[in-house]
Amino acid sequence: GAVVSQHPSWVICKSGTSVKIECRSLDFQATTMFWYRQFPKQSLMLMATSNEGSKATYEQGVEKDKFLINHASLTLSTLTVTSAHPEDSSFYICSASPQDTNYGYTFGSGTRLTVV
Amino acid sequence: GENVEQHPSTLSVQEGDSAVIKCTYSDSASNYFPWYKQELGKGPQLIIDIRSNVGEKKDQRIAVTLNKTAKHFSLHITETQPEDSAVYFCAAIKDRGSTLGRLYFGRGTQLTVWP
Image 1 (cartoon, rainbow over the protein chains, first blue to last red):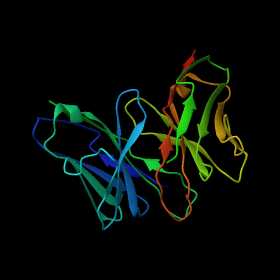
Image 2 (image 1 turned 180 degrees about the horizontal axis):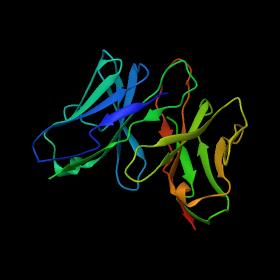
Image 3 (image 1 turned 90 degrees about the vertical axis):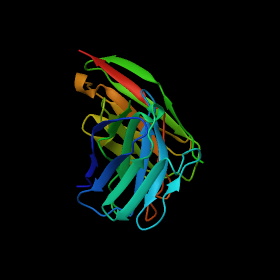
């Protein structure tokens, strides 16, 4: 159990366009999901905490207007990278966990974004 | 906030040998400590975790130990195999119970197991 599905696994887009990444909890409800960014050979950097039915909480230094997060249901959170630029190229990963269980936090398979 | 330190950053071992990765944390309120394995191009995968009321936990070739007094925890992999090669991250969190808090990660350890 506790499966998190993330799509797409990779995407290439042109500068100035927007890209949407989906994160779904397949077999549990997730009132909270987390979005991370990871640069090569570095640790995971928390970008924001996504809360179902309310606004996301962004970490310091993360642009809210650049990285739009929507958590409209208990099983789906989306991250939209708006007006993407080459410096936004990175590996984006989402995470969630069933509450009131002994499961650890489960991560999606990640999305490799390349902006050209 | 919490600060998690992880050592070493790289570790090379011969197949069949043991590997040990160590982490320290700063917040004595942290009470849940997971370990993740991340293969290239994939998301992290939980391999073992331990809670603050337990000193040691083992799952086949993998074990984790926790010293609350010293605020450090370690991952032990025995009889290493080439497929154990990956980046390993330790993490810490407090209030795991009913409140879903954020994980604080170490910087990762690149483990290479040579055949």
